[in-house]
Length: 336
Image (cartoon, rainbow, N blue to C red):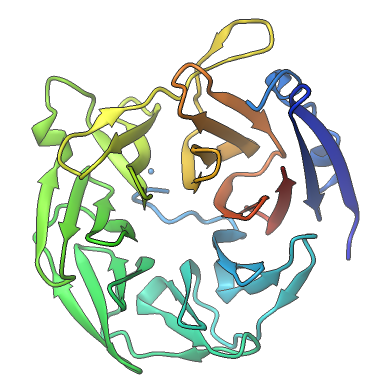
């Protein structure tokens, strides 16, 4: 294993200490000056595929994690950040991954769907499409994939997927499922919702909120036990986070934060992924340029900290550990 840098960052004096382990970073990234707010408290990839090599998504994998990325990379990562590759002879970029029914499913460019039941080697499935598949989720026992040009994929059997074409303007960049419904989002500000996986309602956020909120491009959606969260960017390039309880009415959540000098800081780095810590009722967002945002239930208590200089694309919560991955196959472990 290459050089490891352990860095303890005080995020909430007297209550919480984060230990960030950053792996395989150049020295200038390891010793980069962190965001000042770290020491006080815890503080269009949307439409054009990111060309940098690195991890693009991560998922909990038992008591470990599984990360996927460009050129077909699939790695098992333990809580210490140690990496064990899964053999994959297919080189297409991978955009999303899920661990369902003791099987790994990874999706990517040109209709790629890979599966592994033993965590050692991958096989390729027939997706029935050559479109880029951007995300995958499990809903009511079925796997659902989201792809470019308004395409939804539903797994029919062990080696067959049904393709559904929706009349959308954008690419379906992300999909997430709860107990009673599944939601996807596009890079043109559209929100799709289903209760059966087959029939989808389409909600044009930009049209419905025209004159009230800025038009948006969406990047990721996450359904939690009590909220739906969408991240992306406004038309002016600033980040956006939307919350809703049922997917009908949406409210913008400010991501700006107060630094250790008491000055409100505007967030300019775009968010790429989001996860939810139910025990702490808080969201974590990973962004470009190594920025991590913490959005607790208190809307005035946002915090920000910087862990490296990479664009970050995946974050996953597993018990008391956050695993963060990004460009250059960077891996950061946050224990709290």
